[in-house]
Length: 120
Image (cartoon, rainbow, N blue to C red; front, side):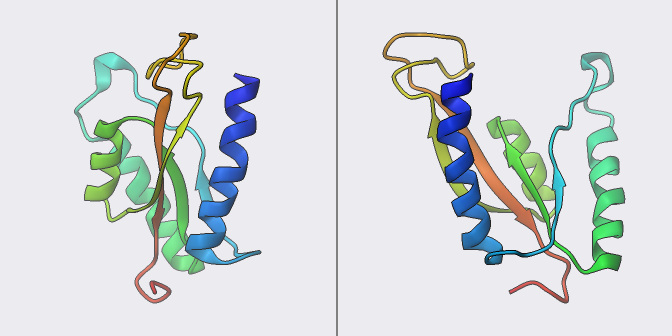
């Protein structure tokens, strides 16, 4: 895990600078999860829309990372744009993050949502 983080942090930081410039203010949705018995009820979308309202009032973008293709698609339907696609742990872990020699690594997508008046 430590090795994957050491790969991830500089890639994510570079993506943030690419999308927003250095020193920009933004909201960061670090971890969103739904209990399996409550999935597909719109809870994640409702939560994100709530934070989009807050971010729009503050005129700051929202940053997040999607760790599955399903989540990437969901975030896109909520107006998030993909900034970069990255693979971490290549040759060390499988796509599920479990140690695997010669594994393909974990694919992640950095994504941003911009309030309409600050969208570029």
